[in-house]
Length: 284
Image (tube, rainbow, N blue to C red; front, side, top):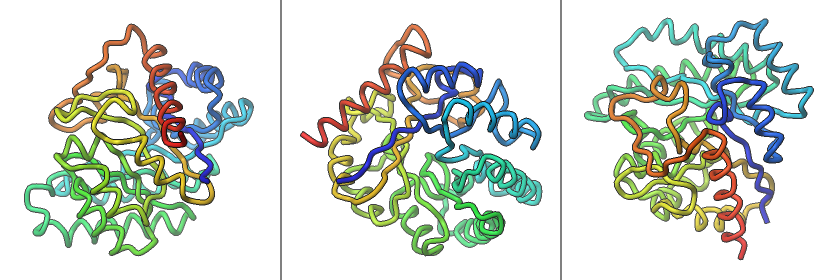
């Protein structure tokens, strides 16, 4: 039986780090995927600010499951050299945070003709992964609509090409929004490569809903993962309410949100409860 550990993008609870800590503590969650801190993206933190964040999290008994970076979330024809410098900076932040994982992507402007873009995607990712390796952290690729790795097949291509040098972040809702079936199709292709999961579900239309209420088959996925030995990190990224900073995270068409919650706290509560119900269903 696996040990499921819940982490969260707590900036969906509040932009304030102090309130994020309050929310995580309230729900008994001791892991965070750090993305937004007091209105700043984690990539914009200075080393001094990162040390202050680390102290607050340490004092609360909260550790990072990953740095939720925007790496690889630029157009492939953009300023790649500056992006490599950003990679070095985020690795420094990860080391200050004593975190061994950085979440990243595989470039916009690549999904319409992926075969033509593949060699450049691999070249740039290889350079970023080398930087991460030099800092002792793992670059973990998340499937996202509009990037090279938006489909299960291309995620598998990346995982096999980098052969253990790159982690795999599995996101059910992102696959649905890309017109792919997350379970069983995507799961069966990627199950041997999954490093951790982002937990958000969606209806066939792409509208985001709580875990277990969409077509992602999250409880079924968890039932399969429960056959593993060891720890499986499930990071809540519920996107159940428009939160400060969401626009900056998206590219092109905006996320459709099905549920109407009165507050970020209420939405976060619903997301945590739904994930815990999904775990119970998986083990029933």
